Length: 469
Figure (cartoon, rainbow, N blue to C red):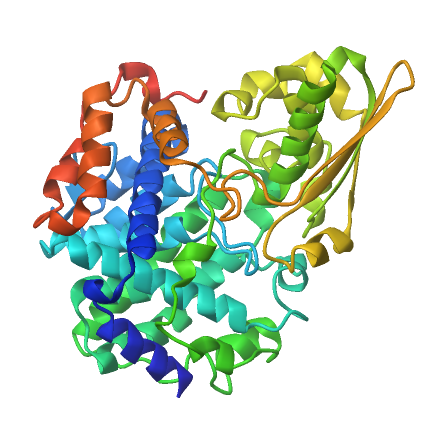
């Protein structure tokens, strides 16, 4: 049974088996996830609402911290809040080949249970790596005929569908489940899995909640399994399992278990340089490079034509009414990049949505899907191409195959720290930012992560931080 083999491997994984690059990547993922979560907690109204909900509905069980809040709550509610906030501003990392977004789904359940059970930092690293491995392998086993674009085109939100299994594996590893218990946890996770795109289409806050429901389900699945609750033995490969229900039975069982432990899938993911859907990164980066190279401003541009790794029509829409929908619109992203010269968290605000210059520029943008771009990178990136025509008749083109953050074009430690500092400015002091980094990068020596969670859960945020930017 392939599910049982995955469970056996996850249970057997030990920190000492991990190579240095994998350990560093797990730490970087954790650091980036904490920055994204703190930003949403301190800056966005949906962060405030989910934090208050988790604090008020925790059953008076102070097990794990709600990041960006002075409160503790039960582990499943902490995972709900922290996952929602990690997913809360399109800053979650990406595995391009599977169209999954692992850290909002995997880090929060691992954090919640490692803190609740007072497990050491090494266990947190193991849980993150195990969660990523299970998550990514389940996605990679889906055949190309179904993976990513076809499933997304049916409205299925793969990060949640697949991520529930990854979350359960991370949670189970944090608890120290035995192989039979881990198998049950994955089986229970299969019963919980779900997620679809309507919230993305309408710009609703449920788009953020996808990142919270998934880790919360993973924690619940692992805790039930720990108590002996019997789950299906074949939730993936069974007659009515995940692959038949969601992928029309088109999958490769060998991909689930081939060469387990020879390398680690967490290395294949990339940390985002921009707070928007990953398929928008390359064309926007190409546009910014083109404008810098040829000294073009938005006032010079007559038309922008872009091709990209488009999965669903909502990424090509020109009408954007909410920040959520703006983060899923290539025409908006290109327009705001041309006008503002960047696409940071400062560009995705209600004020920018109403900027007449940005709105006018959107009308000059045309976008299309180009399958050949993805084929050139073996579907392991989200490439893009941009052609700009100026008002005086000049024409310039630029292409980006591997956007900033991709493993072939990674962010440096300096860039990662600068990103964290920008996300937590005004929320943490510079000394606190540095201390978070130091603890995370020394995680294998940490006996109790409470110090880290205390730093990330301070009640000292400014009064106005709950307002939308």
